[in-house]
Length: 318
Picture 1 (cartoon, rainbow, N blue to C red):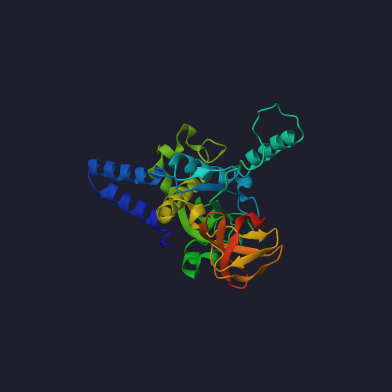
Picture 2: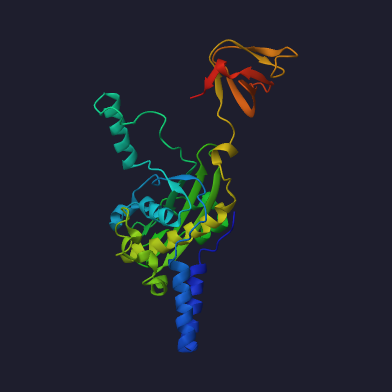
């Protein structure tokens, strides 16, 4: 995982400010344009890295006090514009879809509606946007949601600020988890402050529909813009980390376990030669290796025995 210095954005802004004050007008304009472009552009991927569900962080809904939409809505805008993932809805859209399926199950929909089980696309990854640090400021000037220790002592010390309303600064974190293995495949931090807004004013990320899709408040409030830049920095770093993800996340993961549904035998070879390794009782769980020969699947049992079993004698574990 790439290490990121959360004070880098502020350091670059200060350096460019000095340059603008000492260099000629042409150089100052170029530096400012480069800074705005770097901060204000959403990265675009050449291919989708898989399907993604963006979910709200657990705990206090810190964004409601600032009249902001959930940061999940903001990240969905980034994901949609970057084309780095295919979004799947696990929020209000899913609830509405489940209601529609309820109507279908009750026989209320017209014939040929084609709504039923087995149609929902699985999420390969789950992304959670959060702020870093705990709320240890009783005056309410700082807000936080994620304990910094989760990302190491050095990083925690660097991003302990969370969101500081008075100073208009934000330290945020994005985590991505493999939905099948529960492995946390990436984590990135982002930092921004009020001083960064001067370099990013007018950048594409704040224009019109750029912050549509329910991400209200982020484009037209100062703290919202600071949070936008912080999350954009984290998302840009995240995309760089995820470049090595497999093209097919489902195939790259371990095969789903199966459960014996009828009395069976674990055979030494797929053609039945060599006899049986052992008998298999109904209800036993088996773990496919991925090797198949017609209807025969190679599997491991819970004791580590390996052999072949007819796939008509088991079903996918639920």
